[in-house]
Length: 208
Image (cartoon, rainbow, N blue to C red; front, side, top):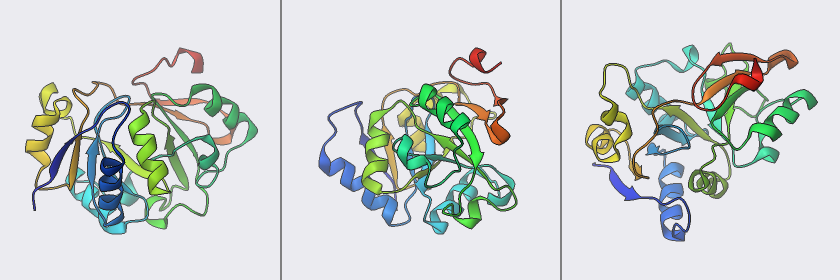
């Protein structure tokens, strides 16, 4: 079954559109959507079937990779990660924004996503439509950037080309116009210390 390509706007999206996306996610669906950085693959963190589909698309193994979650707001992070006072001050300052913060995972994170790692990457992108979807879903969205290696820039930034590539592999592609070129910066906050894992979008100079 071929995916649907749906136009999404930075604000004032219809309730019907939101419901369509949430229904797809609740039925083990995989979606491609824009963020404040790049286009990404996503699914419900509660769907082992959808997580397996994403791993197949990216040709990765869940126990070999760190996955990130999109949370709806700061208050919901504590359900899925252990947040110290040190970490909370940083999260409050930099989120929403183009950063992924690595924190100790809580017991509520599905076991398939923390095998051997016990950590989780947390994102709150500065992109309201995705935050609205996560709120409606009621739990975080697993998120991982689209593959880029060996591809032309347009292949992972142009939603029409993204749709052509993935229409038989995902359920929905949300068209938010051209995406960005850089992934989020990844900042490790374990042990109340700051370590830059990946410098991407956003200004990392404050963390040095």
